[in-house]
Amino acid sequence: MALSKFGLAALLTLASVQAAPTKGKTPEIIWDGRIPYNMSLADFDSNSTSRYDAEFVLGAGQKFSEILKFPGVMGSTFDMHTISKPVEVTINDKSIFAPGGNSQKGFRRSELLPITNNGTDATVQGVTTFHFSIQPDMARPLNVSHQYELVFIETNDYSSHVWSIKAGTPFGSSVHPSREAKYLRLEGSTAGGKAGKTLFQVPWLTNTWHNFAITTDWANNKLTAYYSCGYKPLKKVVKTITNDATGKGQAHIGVLKLPTDSTDATHNGYQESNLNEGVIYSGVFVERGAATLHKI
Image (cartoon, rainbow, N blue to C red; front, side, top):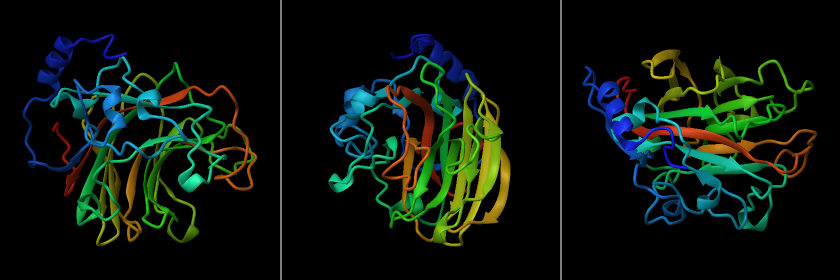
């Protein structure tokens, strides 16, 4: 449903308050993934009308118009100025990705990929900042006994992640759910097969936006991260650190649910039936250079 609680008039009113001019650099947006107010779900099914790849990543035989929803919630701070709206990404029992006919039966996944992001494009050159906001949908709750990857940069050779936003119980944990299951966690590079180090974590509160801006220096292998909750300004939560970004890669925005009781997370393990889970996204875009902390 499209903005059932808030009409366009309310959206415009709040935008005039939230997007008041502030001092700061003028951003150069390389790719804008925010959803125009008049965009339909069917528009996601064609590369000619979508800002995201219409073919990847989703279950075999599925269309994005079948698994995406327009939830009745107000957009995050960075949606306000452009009069954009949130989008929800869902998974169900058919969310089994099968690249080249090789079914990934261990995963349940639905992810949006920026249509211009081919792995070596401008979004992964020089210094860039990836903005996004997420919140859980309590009508489609996640099962936090599982690990979820909700936003991540996958390297060109598919071997590792440059950074990831995760929730739920870490894969391989002996306790389900684990102590950190209800936290959002920013993890660093997994290059070379190493486990990603938790760089920042925060309780994943419901009914509010969790806003991130992650700056990557692709040439010098550096990462800086910013975060805020609700409509508060972004603040630095990870000072600039070394983080392997040599693999560059593609951004994934959506729900990747790992199995439990698995010897090969991609191809086997336990996933419960009758899935109806979702995560809401807003204010997604990539800018050149360091993070702009005011509204865009």
